[in-house]
Every structure is written in structure tokens, then in C-alpha cells.
Length: 368
Ligand SMILES: [Mg+2]
Image 1 (cartoon, rainbow, N blue to C red):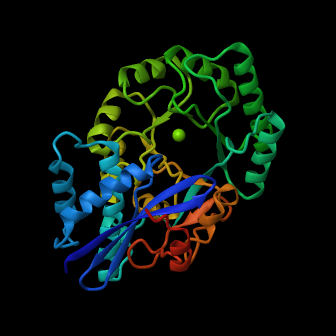
Image 2: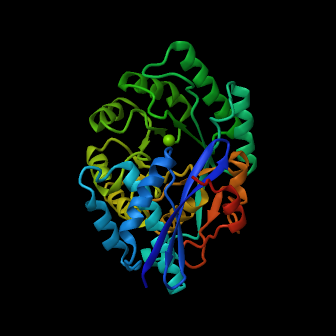
């Protein structure tokens, strides 16, 4: 079997969000699908087209070979986020092809399932102009009502670098409202989106410690692991990071620094399904838990679920909550992924086990 076409697809998801999918076509008529969405989908699409040109005529079954050759092919941009996002999406599609050919779900190629259902948390509470504790509490109560055991919020607004007393008090009021709404038996994670320097991050972590957060995410930016470890040494909450760290090499440095307890590998950013599985194994050897990042379309979420099914050190999977996601997300799959009482079932069909509704995909594809 040979690859005949790599077709990037820019999808207008609504709410000013654009997702990057890919179809890998073969001469046998088998088509694999994947997702390489980043915050810069138009840039990643250009890279994906360029990578795709190099894969024409190749055997789609040689996933590792194609990955290694693609990873090492371009000298100066090796390992960069755009190359990795594009490569991740293509890699998902190669797994989808392999599974469809063998009539097996992708998790069977990763050692088989450890679980059929994956616990998920609801990340849906820092959009829509929420600006007061009552609004946060309402959203949290709604998540509890839907059966979620954990939620995530970013209550820090426009604070950058440091945070003043008034903003910190307001943030704490929002966390307190959420903690009240979810009660003592559920979790609230706090994402700072790397807004702070070391001093601000430490101040924030100390302030929210009283609410027993699930974890504090990206307290500082990912470039300087010494700074992250410095934060780690000064705070009493668990640190999670990794959505902007790439490949086994990036996670090697993170894990060796012992600067976090939870890694947030993103299967659409890190290099793909197999790379995420490798990273999870590296984390396992450091007694570090994995809480995969997912804040884009449903193909990368499906790919992540196949990894989640097979790793012993899974903590919880992130999910964007459907009812606050773009309207063109819920109708995109022929069978939507829907969390039920805070868990998602691992797709069991061949390959990734999900398929586009082709009419919805075509209607919302962005044509250059
Ligand atoms: Mg984050």
C-alpha cells in the first residue's frame, strides 16, 4: 500500500476557532484521519502540506520510519511546535490506516487496554467573560450536575508577571466559590497559563493552597525548567505542565528536572500517539502521573483516548465541555464523543474508531 495524498483540512469550528485535520489517502482506498490543531492552525497547515509532499509513495504501515525521517529531515526547524503538530496529525492518520487495514482499534497496537472508560475533567470555565464568583459557581455546579469529578479554571484575568492584592483576592473568591459549589469530594484544578514570573507564581500557589487544588498548571512558562523547579521547591501544591513541551526529548528534560508531579502531554502536539505512549512510560519511571491536554477538535481527543486506555499512570483526561464548545464540534463526528457522568468510553471501532460527518466537514472547510 502507498500513500497517494496528504490532505490538510482547515475547519471553521465557530467562535473564531479553526481546527486542523488531515486525511491521508492511499492507493488501496483506505483513508486515515488525524488532527494537528494548535493555536496557529494556518501555520501548521502550511507545514503539513510540505511534510505531506515528502510522504507520497511511502508505505503508510511504516509509522516509526516515516516519523523518524520526518523528524530529522529539516535541520533548523527540527523539533519545533509547528513541525510536531503537523507530524502528530499525520501520525494519527497513519495509525487510523493501520487499524482499519487490520480491523483493530489503535489501542490494540499499544499493548491493549488497561481500562474501557477514561475519567475526564471539565475545562470550560474561563471563557465567556465570566468575571464574578457567582458565575464561576454556577458553571461548577452545572459540571457537578453532569457528573464530572473535577473541573479546571483560570481565575487570574489579565494579570501578567505579578499579581496585585485586589486581583489575587478576586481570584481567590472565584476559587472559593467553585470549591463551595463542588464540595469537598471533587477536584478543582487551577491553570495560570504561564502568566507569572517565579515570584507571582509562588504568591498565587500559596494563596490557592487553602482550597486544596487538584494541581496548579503552567505556573511559569515552559522554556526555563530551572525556574519551574524553583517554583516547585517553594510551593505546597502539585504542579502540572507539558501542553507546550514536545517529544520524548522535551519531556526527558522536564522529568529529569523533577519540577512537576503531573505531565500534560498533548497527542496533537507532542509527536503523536506513539510519542505520547513513550512519554507516558518515561513519566511512569519517574512516578509522575499523566493528565493529557486536549482543548481542540474531537479527532485528537479520540487519539488521546487510545493512549489513555493503555497507560498505567493516567490521572485524568482533559476535555473541552461540549455544551460550551463551538456549535460545529458536536455535529462533526458521525457518532459524537460524549462524556457520561465524567467518563468517556474508549472508541472500539477499527483505527481511531471515529469518523467525520463528511457533509458537516465539507460545509465548514475553509478554502484558501
Ligand atoms: Mg493549560
